[in-house]
Structures are given as structure tokens and as C-alpha cells.
Image 1 (cartoon, rainbow, N blue to C red):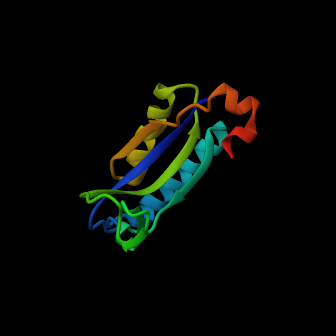
Image 2: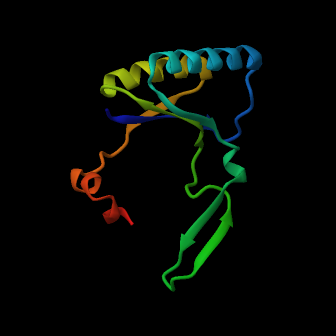
Length: 126
């Protein structure tokens, strides 16, 4: 069954809404619903993007670590769910619930399927 990323989008200077306690209850209820439905593989929140570290390979081959997110953006991923759904339509239905519970936009993306030859020969991934 395909896996989908449901990514919670926070604006650059995100602050908890005034109804943060209600939001937390809504998110917990959604997590329980996802678990009961058997779709939730993983869920987690992320620290703010300003606390991120980025690692970039330079033309010289040197790796440079810098403070902050890799991409300059007005929105950043604030958390995520990894869901196992029959198709994109089902994943979007869960994302609709996530947008309501989290009170922010969410993005849904399907994970790339693992090629059959890699499944048959896991040594190939090393």
C-alpha cells in the first residue's frame, strides 16, 4: 500500500493560536482516529526552522554546516504524518482533517515506490 507524507505548513514566525489547548486536543483526537483506522505509520512535530542546520557540499567537496533551513521560504514544515493509504484521495481526506485540527495548511505527497528489483535484492540499496 502506498505511503503518503502529510506535512503541516507553518508560517515563518509561527506562534501557537489562542486556542492552543483545543488545537492540541483536536490533533490528539485525529491521531487516535488515524491509529484506529490503521493508516498512521508515524507522526511528529518539528522544532522551528530557525533551529535547523543545513549541510551543503561545495564544489571543492568540502561539506559546510550552516544555521537555518536549507531553503529560504516564508513557510516551513512544522510537523508531519506518514500515512499508509489506498490512494491519494484517501490521503487527501486525512489531510483535510489535519488542516482543520492544526489550523494551518498541509501538503500531501506520495512517497516514491521502491523498485521491485530493490525489494528482491536489498543488498543493492547499500
